[in-house]
Length: 184
View 1 (tube, rainbow, N blue to C red):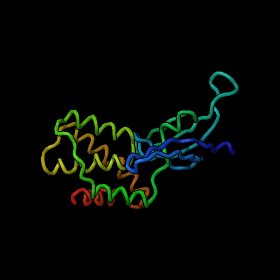
View 2 (cartoon, one colour):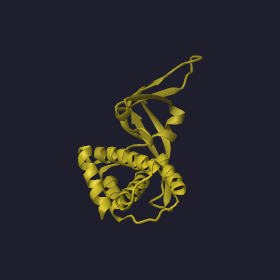
View 3 (cartoon, rainbow, N blue to C red):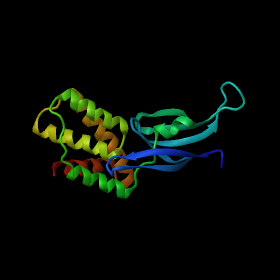
View 4 (cartoon, helix red, strand yellow):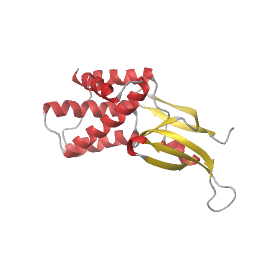
């Protein structure tokens, strides 16, 4: 194993598929990763850091361009924080999910906001698609509360960024695709 790569056992649960699976991923310097709150990032380096002795843990230095932020995360914490970005086929399934999803949400704004925030915190693209569609439809039918507007913006930003990378399309075009899918 090179100093710039490490193996991570990552538990990723696909609620939309109805089962869970463990997926070992390998990250290396230069790889793209996805963080639920900060979006698509880049692994700048993976190094041992010693703060109080010679045998320090390994840390990954992650850069998130959207927020112009650098995060230093220990190897032990990394598996619970990030995942590999979705591929093109999964991105197409997410767009289909936006188009076809017709789930119901609570009319009480606080219950709805809490459920949607949980989905946003999870970072699952299918859950983000549900939040996006729910709020995009509500926006057309009625005005949104400030919490709903914030969650719509957050879901659209995170989802569009990941879909743009997966589909190799400009973010603006992906936003139009998402809007078209939500209208159907």
